Length: 287
Image 1 (cartoon, helix red, strand yellow):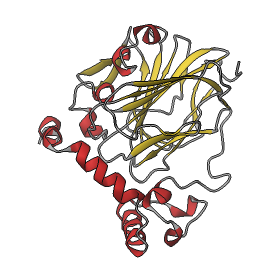
Image 2: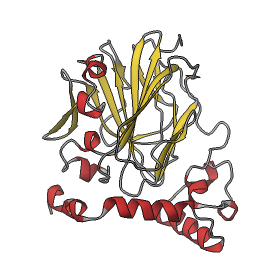
Image 3: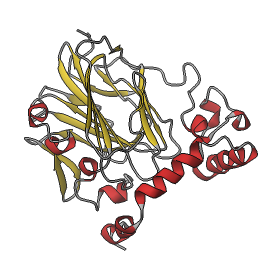
Image 4: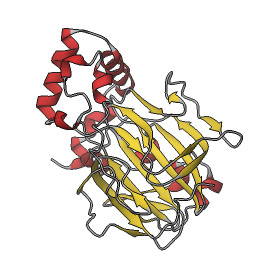
């Protein structure tokens, strides 16, 4: 079956209703039923609980508490690099932005302007720059950390579809990451601006940041923006910046620069938080 046919049911499913239901189930404090769900999930997806700060699945009051569990101290040492990998997961795509076109999958590109809620002036800052699209599967650690130092300037919530973001869907749905619900975080460092986008998906109950909390509740259907020029939200490389309540994808944009990605990286490859992502971009001196 072709990828296009395989994802056809996603166009027909009531994705918003399914996501709302999943969110209610995940946040419920269901006692033994919650523990049973967590135990099933751990078996089904092969979750490594030995890395968790709390390995006792029965101690989590809700599925969300389990899903956003912290890791043990030292479980993800940070490499010495200009950019470290911000998540556990798999590489969807990475490389150069061609003008304002970002590669999604064979036969599919989307524009940085579309990704950034139609903000052409913001997108222009990343023309011919670099991008990385990183997929978090259900089994992965779902907190997102800073790839480099940054001062938060803006956050934009963009309503949208809730397609799955797995590789098969990315290969079949045009402009997937620019049409799904997302949260755009715009940072500034001494070397210039950079962007981290949290992309929502089917049954992703919510997306949260450490400075705001849950961003996409309630789902109003309207673009919302917060500006932080008069606030001091500074995060150092390796610090947690946000989390997904159920899995999804992050997209990172960097300005034109002699950025050299980790030579061991390739699409589909497994990645871990803290490993080298790239060098050549001096962004680790906050303003």
